[in-house]
Image (cartoon, rainbow, N blue to C red; front, side, top):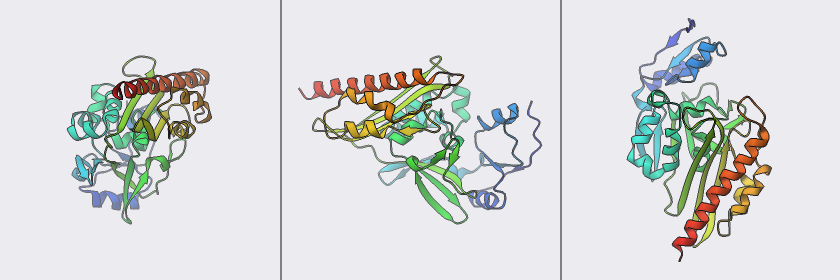
Length: 287
């Protein structure tokens, strides 16, 4: 059972939360708690205090953000799956949300919590990279946005100041020529921690790839873009052979769930399969 007697700060609104964050940067932010409580229970995490954000209305809901979307930090996976705007803008993110744990976890776990947890195996993270998402963070000093591509600086390390809180995840509008993709490979089909994940987005105009985003999870210290692969894809029709370059971009390790060799080969194969399917569909639609 959980035996932590750490104090819990319960702000009434976001302004109070930011003030408490500034005064108590050592306090662990707490949203859905689906990861934090596991760590506390196992004894691997023992923060001196908690900052409970769950009651903050300002951090809930999905809103228009220009032509894109602003997803509040407390938006759960279940809410993401059900939101028609998210379905239209980021179908790959909806697919990722469906793979997170069981329904109980999806009902309580939050997208921003997945981002803040900074696990290399975070289910949503490769998709957010592929979608060029930005993370909105706030402090008593103001608000700023950090590109997902610049958020992680090392294993479970984020480019945030000690007094900052994640307040939203922001998605750009979906381009009509974009194709999105998500694939998770685990030990089983459901309730599994990933061995390899792929998040992808291709913009295909006139039969040519004009923009490519290919991102992987569980293959490095933090989720990464496969920039060598991306560069090989742009400026030509979709070519599945670009998947053979993935070894230049990812550095998987051996661990309890898998081996580096397996992860590298699976990453190559799932990317190759997606690219081949997109190429075939594009060729068919061009006839």
